[in-house]
Length: 461
Image (tube, rainbow, N blue to C red; front, side, top):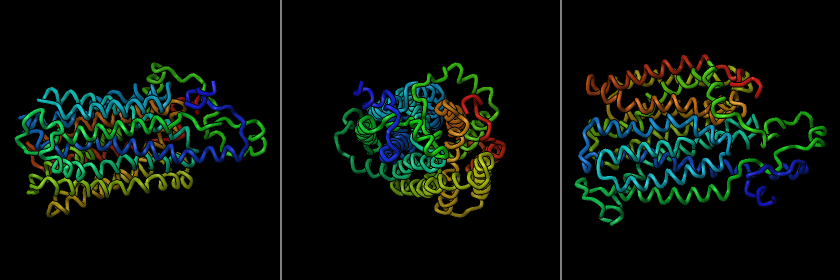
């Protein structure tokens, strides 16, 4: 039985001393840290295709429409499996779900280096979306279990920053690695590459690194803080302590998947939450899908310079993630649970729309990159509020609640490259930026209407 406690599959016995409890809870920073590392590789494996898609298109003989469908395929299955994977995290624990997810998506990433045509490439991108779908819902469950309510925004921002950091380094790292692996027989023996870039080897290297992260995550992470249920003596000694922020009933049976779907679909909050993310992703996903193609059309021919410019945009955005957790926690304390969540969402997304509307009037590729960086900063600034809102209203269904919003949001991400490619072909790049701005306007309206005081299931509040 003690081995079960050690593996984290059963809750630790309640009632350690207050000092011991505080020491054990300090481990939450380690848990958040390794989860952030997992998020980093999540984004590296997700984003690297966009910087390699043009040599991949040449080597596999893809049309522009096939390229757009490959870029959107990941987001389709990523969206559709958000709720099922989030439900699994609620039921079986985030350690198992996220640990397996990291291992599977790493194997799929490595397999991308061996594709021979459009169908195979489309298939591995669809599989990657399924494998990564459980990552953020499971991470959100983990954050809620290990963080106190006043820490949720900051802890969520740390994990999400890990993902954004992966997005920041992925373009330049991927471009540099593709150049460095030129001529190296790492999957390049599998097929002839007229582009001269060993993109196949890049995917193999990333897959192997991801497997190492999966092993590290499994060895370190536990589902619950040790001794997470406080003793009666502790509660009587300090009745004002935030004991409710820790999971006092980890063995309670979770809501069934069917019941979760009913609860989520009945909630006005959840539909607004999902519509907000749908609108945001239509605009933001341009940065990680079509930006390199836009830069080629703008006269940036060197793959490393394009990787650097995409990295600059994502780096500026990631800085917003660092501040977003503190902003949402501070505003919640000052404005209360409702306005403290809705105001930062509506305000930051409105500013995103303004920036996109101004882009067509800007001169030069680097000026556009700076503007897109400002947009990405505002998106990442509000991202911890998204997580915190799901944790506020989700009850014991946090994974499914975040998954519901992510599902609709990533349907928007899947639509984005296909829609924006058609808009570009019909009316040019300026129309693309206007379209993105309009999607942000619709998302901002949804953000202002959210109410974090109305849980998905009042009985779970």
